[in-house]
Every structure is written in C-alpha cells, then in structure tokens.
Length: 340
Image 1 (cartoon, one colour):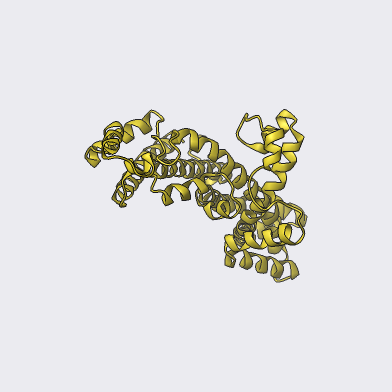
Image 2: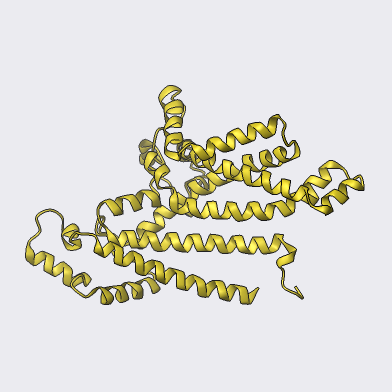
C-alpha cells in the first residue's frame, strides 16, 4: 500500500502540472486585456500599465506561469479580476455549496438506485426489472437541465411547494443569518439551532439535489444490476445455492459485497465528475457553487478564477479517485498485498 500511494502521489503531481500548464496557456491565448477588466470601463493607459506592472501581466508567459505556480504551492491562487477578491477565499465559500449539493444528490441516488438495482437482479425479467430499466434509460436520456426545469415548473410553478432558485431565502438571511462553521448550511444551521435558516436551506436544496439524483440514479441502478448479475453467475454462488443456503444470505452476503466493488468504482467516478460538472444544475437553480463561479469566470475572461477552479476541480477529482481506489482495495481481497 505505501508503494501504491507513492505512485499515485507522483502521478497526481504530474497530472496537476500538465493540467495547470495547458489551462494557463489556453486562458492567456483568449483575446482580452486582463488589466482593463480589472480596472473597469474607460481606464487610462497609465492605469493599465500600472496594473500590468503590479500583477506581472507585462512579463513573458513562462515567467508568469512560474510566478503563478509559486503562488499555488503556497496556497495563493491569485486575485479575481472580476470580484477583486482572493480566488482562494472565493473558492472556499463556493466549494462548500457544491460539496453539500453534490453529496446530498449522490446520497439520494445511492439510497434509491442500489436497492432497485439489487432487486432488479434478483427478479430478472420481472416487473421490477423492466421498471428499473425504464428509469435508468430515462435518467441517461434526459439532460440534467431539462429535468431541472421540469421540477421547477411542477413544484414551484404549479404547486408552489418549493422555492425556485437560490440557497437561502433573502428574508431569512436578513433576520436569521447562518453562522458558518463548516460552510455546509444544513449542518451549520443544525449545530447552531437556527431552525428558520435550516428549513429554508432544506427547501432550497431539494430541487437541485433531486435533479442530480435523477441523473445519477440511472448510473447506480444499471451498474448495481449488471454487477449483481455477473456475480450471481459465478461458481461459488451456484455452490451456495446447491448447499441450500437461504436466498437472503446468498444475495446480501455472498453476492452484494463483490458487486459493490464495481458499483463503488463507478459511483466514485460519477461523484468526482459531479463535483466539477454540476455547473448546469447550479446555473438553473442559481446555486452559488463552483459551477456558477466557473461560468462567470469564463464569461468575464477572469483567468485567475478559471485557473483556480481548474486546480480545485483537478485536486477534488484526484482525491475522490484515490479514496475510491482505497475502498476498492478494501472490498476486493485479491488486491491486498501479501502479508497484509
């Protein structure tokens, strides 16, 4: 395991270096004057030259890249040209919002998709199996933004049960502001006993979380079903049936754990993708997360913001995949090193 972790760490450093280099070059090739963006409308030439000297925009690209990477190594991702705030603080606040939404959506997908996938494999060809395949195909075929708009139309436009957009109602924020402990509003409001803010947060997160869950439950259901069917065809499972072991024991002790190896791998990849690819959902629901920040940074040619989001996305995805690999090793005894 230590050798494996060392190899992964070396690969992580190489991937991050290549990704930051490619993103840095691409963002600097986009037409536009970062100094003019920073200063606002109608800046003077003297002001532009002063900003270029201050931030090093007048230096050659290799020099700018080296300076940027030196800042990254010390935790400094630069200053946003759009908001004029440190990118690190901007990302910190928004990552919590994205993490909360993505985690809840994936948890809902697992809670629904895994039992359906297992039940579908147990009753292959039955009504549950056919229904699960319809749900899975619908989740794969329907774009997330379309599903989100349908949910908005139904639960806000028609029924008026849930809020349309945002993370917290403005009037609640004014009278019962959230005391940030973790950045996760659901947890922070529970820990501080801020029930009005908790109710508002819970109501606001339902629709975007359901949107993420609907698209993710299709992946979980299909993978759980196919993994269970593959395991159920193995000789040791047939032997368990031949010995007359109870059906529940065969399915949930001998078949489910090996099947989870495949499910965990796919779910981990999907979760890592959602952390970096939920910008459509966040845009539809005006969710103040990383996706929304990335879109605004791209639209305004705020390359420090784009670079910061890219670095954070890459690190998050790599860490999620590392966690998946560790869980994979724990679930599959064939991958354990000799003597462990």
